[in-house]
Every structure is written in structure tokens, then in C-alpha cells.
Image (cartoon, rainbow, N blue to C red; front, side, top):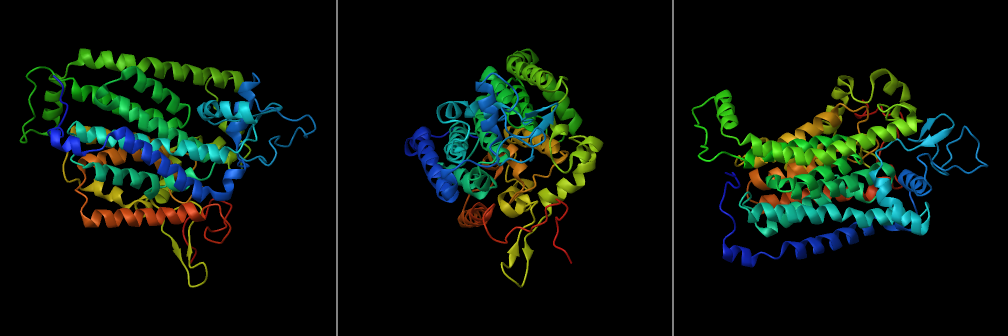
Length: 460
């Protein structure tokens, strides 16, 4: 028996007054790409100097995994013009893109038609509207199935929060390799939520997780959400709710006894098939590029903290305190001289860019579905927080793009109704992130000029 909802689904009269989700989603997409295009402005006419995925797409189209270098470029200089050595991996006498490869697959069509110097920033803007549009469909589905009490206007507000009130806004208008991965990863993440809800489409959900892993590695842990959903919806006939007097261990034991584990394992098996295929492809690519199925190539990146990676690895407890400070503690720098406000190149704390996240600390209501979303978000965040990079250079903690959709889904279910204060806080979040989208990587002195990645806090 499926535990499908905590509230009754929309009544017929409510459903009749709610616009069709696909129509609203199309409007969301169009508004998003127009706004992103306005903020990208002159960038739309050219490619990013850090268009690594265009070079990798070009390599794929020519049947190779290494970047195709012009013969007249010196062997010891990074061959992509304008790219310098920044985040290009050198192995042997060839150059590689060490980042997960799926964004390059997405780039293959425009590269085939226009060449590897196509204006990828404009293409990224077109891609950036996909995640907000799919998010609205997901939120609408939560309401129609009775998981969420949100009206369609509140769902639209939450969609606007993601599109323009989180760090996704400044991310969407950049076009550089690091931000392209976030844009594509968010679209895959939103599509995954639609297929993983109620564990409804296991193979499709697994395929999307596989592609997401080949885009943003840490998002592999979103698979936790599918597993928890399979457990939530597959309950044995006669399963009862745990008593409020029971302790946690007793509740978990009763829940486990009353779960249809055969149905759960069937769903998980179908989900796992494309995930395993994606992992095998990843290892094969590592072997073909760097001679070892375990070698990701990051230690060959031409970056100043290569020594740090060689000493501590890509993921280590050593990085946790710094990353926690970046994600939770960084504030704007206030000064008496122009520009009066500066931002560390490590960015601003999550609750500064998007204060709505604080509401999840004291939810208005609790549901298993929202708990599943939060657990999956915490799984992804835990891996991001152990990573060797804080996200530097950024306006806000950009790695939150990996799990923000999960948090917004939980906020839709567990959050309080949006009265006047809710819309005011939405406007505040949009104002803060509009500032970031307008100023990041633009002329001016808004971002402190430390290039060592050591300056997080304002000097005394």
C-alpha cells in the first residue's frame, strides 16, 4: 500500500482555477531567458575565454578525448587560445578537460554547426531557463498530489526564488566552464525530481542521475532521494503510523517491518542499472585519458593549488572548516569609501543570498517526503563541503546549486504560507541576487582583489 500524501489532493474547483502547469512552465522559461539575457548583455555576442566544454565537444566530434591543439603553439603552453593554464589538465604531451563530460555532449550540436568558438554564453542562457521551468512543474505536482498546500501563485513565487533569488541567478549569466556545469546540472536535477517522486519512473530517474554524475559529481548522492521514496511509497497492507510515545529506534523498526522490501528492491534495481552504466563509462574515460580507471585527472590541472590536491586529495576533512565558513559565515565587507560594499571572492553565505533557507530550521509541518528531500540535500552538501575548492571565485556559495532544488521542494511542503512577509523576503532575496548577477565578473571594485584564495574575511 502506498503512502502517497499527507494532505488531500486539490479539489476539482481548486484544480480548475489552477493554470495548466506546462503553460506556466513555458512562461517561466521565456521570462527566465529574457532576464538572463538582459543581464548577460554584451556577453551574448562572444564565447567565454573559459569555454572548456566547447573544446571537449570539438574533440569528441573529431574522435579524440584530448584537446585538439594548433601545431604552431608551443608544447608547454596551454593550447586553447585565451584559456591559459587555468583548469586545463596536462598529461603527457596532451591537454585534457578533467571535468565531468556531459556538458560537452550538450555542446556538440552547436559546436558541429558553428565551430568551437561559437557564442556559448548565449547558448547557456537558453539552457538556464530549463531548470526553473521544470521546477515549477515539480512544485505543481506536489500541490496536485496533496503533498504541498501551496497555491499556484506560491509555487510560482518559489520558482522565482530559485531563478532570481538564489545563486543560480549569477550562475546563469556567466557562460564559463564552471557555471555551465551548474546550469546543466540544475536542469538534470529538476528532471530527476519529476521522475523520482513516488519512485514512479526508476529507469528514467537512474539515467538522469547518471547524466548528472557526469555533470556535477556530487549530485550522484541525490540517488538517496530515490531510495527513500521507494521505501516511503511501498508499505505493506495494514501498515500503521508509529505512536508518538515510541522512541526513534522503535519507530524505525516498525517502519522497516511494515515496508514491502521486495517492491522496494525491484524499483532500486531498475534505478541502479543506468547508474552503474554511468559509473563504468566514467572509469573507462579515466583509463583512456589518464591510464588508470581511478584517475580523474584533477591532479594534472594547471592551477596554483595543485600541491594542495596532491597532499590532501580532492575530498578531505581538512577542507571542511574553510568550506563551512564560506557557506555559512561570509558577510559583505562594509567600508566608508567607494564602493562602500565589497564581497570576498569566496562569496556570501547561503542565508545572506537566500534567507528563506532559514525557515527549514523550524518547519511549520513535517512529512516523510520533505524529510527525504532534506536528507538527499544534506548528503550532497556533505560531499561538497569536503571538496578541495570552496567555489572560489563566486558571488555566493555556488555549490548550493547542486542541492537547492531539493531544499526548495522541502520548503514548499514544510514551509509556512506566504503572507505579506513571505513576499517581502522574496523581494529581498531577488534584490540581493540581482546585485550579484549585475556585478559579478564586471568592471568595478565590488569584489576584493585577492588572487590567493586566502582572503575570506575583511582585514582589520
